Length: 260
Image 1 (cartoon, rainbow, N blue to C red):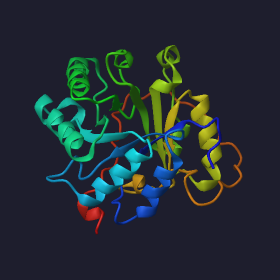
Image 2: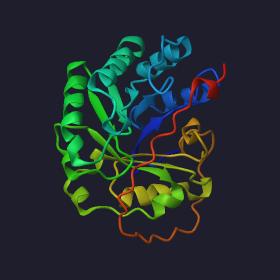
Image 3: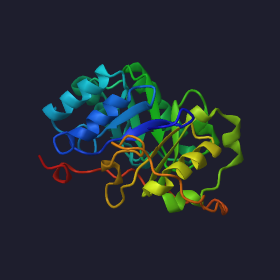
């Protein structure tokens, strides 16, 4: 069970509903008080046609009151405005998504105008929630209200998260504007991870035990069938200087990785 002080979950549930229906049911059962939103990723995007299994899963999450975000890869600003908007519109039409997750979002200031246009188009298309998946801390101007409602400013392994350095500008914004996505978190470190996320002022997060090519095929800690184990000794926090390296994008399973 997730504690009342835990960050709300942004769940990138990248497993086919026919392969692991229990995972989708567990997320729906958690409800909107626990789950901020679920990222819907069919095939690195909406795919060529609606998929009945995803349509049903999306309908069940919507009925549970959980917002759905359509996954769209922006390729660090290299995909055109038209390509990106076309995909978010397909998600809206086929799966009733109420928001969009712009993954591989560029973090440099030259890309600000591009993402402002995308955000404007998303709002006009009916997206109530816009998430920018930088995976790293971007140029501070990306936190302006006209852009995303939520910035994913970390996405990586538990070991990498231990070494994260927070830029000072994040302290000028509410915690609810930031999301940290952490994979390869051992069960015995789940509580320590939650405490570290809270100390780093991320109001939305997701920690999963999975790793490899698609860590997001596993349920977040706290949504399993049993209680979390007792916390292990706290990890050492030795933040180095920020490197400015590009973020690792969310792992995106192909349909071949989600066999029916």
